[in-house]
Length: 216
Image (cartoon, rainbow, N blue to C red; front, side):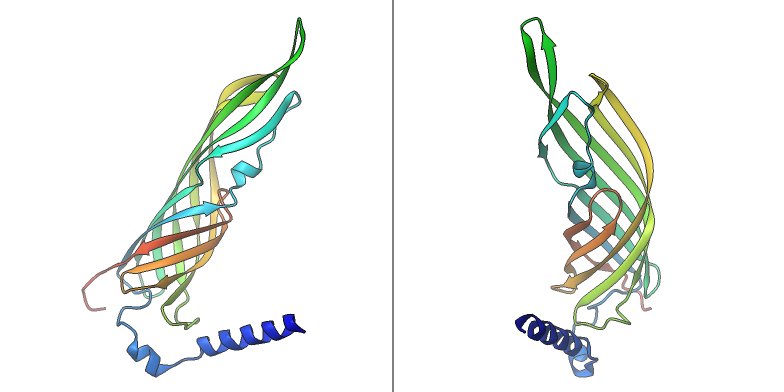
């Protein structure tokens, strides 16, 4: 019963927030939403890293902990129209896979501990469609995006058979994102997005908006 009541209250609150309110919109800063001519650099951190989770080892090796940083995203978007923006996207992912390798020597079996330094740099282009004309919530800028990214990936101690080697991969991935910015001032917003880019499932960050002063 409590779950149902909570759901109904949440639904009611979302409905109320989404209702058009001309008086409230008049009290908003003139540049509260996404606009044509906006120049928006953003920085964010990624979570649920696919590369960390999908690391597999051949027989004779055993996983240990993974150490290092979480992915860092940089995005720069320019508003081409009132709803569409084009962005350059960058991602840097760096951490260490720690594992052990089992050996058999003259005195019996023993273990050596290894570290594989993973480094990935991704860059691409994406188009974003902003849904502020459809989802009308105060100070909110919802969006969806699609694009392509090119990745340069390096492992400095990739397990192969019973030995280690340097491995470098170059791949291309689809970029699909959905998210929203919430403006805490006319220039600064916090934002989050979820989706697919073969790095992380979601990211959280901050944006700063610069506006073209020409009349639109």
